Image 1 (cartoon, helix red, strand yellow):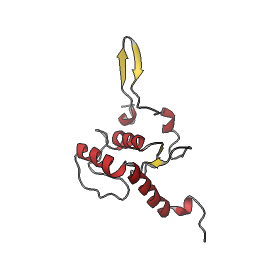
Image 2 (cartoon, rainbow, N blue to C red; image 1 turned 90 degrees about the horizontal axis):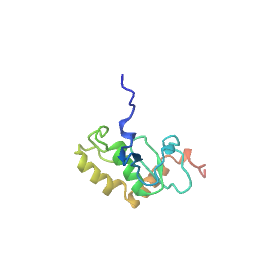
Image 3 (cartoon, rainbow, N blue to C red; image 1 turned 30 degrees about the vertical axis):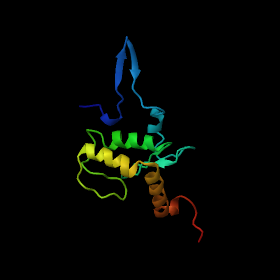
Image 4 (cartoon, helix red, strand yellow; image 1 turned 135 degrees about the horizontal axis):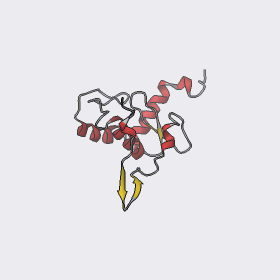
Length: 129
């Protein structure tokens, strides 16, 4: 019986002169795991991978998240499942580059959010009808 639920979320630790250090990316907090899909002030970029919809403060945070949580060695499904993307078969390395160029640039993320808002305007703000 394995108790490891999702290996993608484990954070590597290193022993440095007897002290244990977590190798966490900057401004990443474990608390964000529980606040899924809750947008906090300053979080203007959303991961649009399949049904992920997590909010982040910067495009690079979205990229780091998507590359590790969706494109990680044990979780990458062999194709990009970003909303609106063609599901071509891609090698992982090719996918990471594709993710950075096509989905995680500031412009691409903002454009994706605009499309998302139009698609789900009903549950985000009252319509003007």
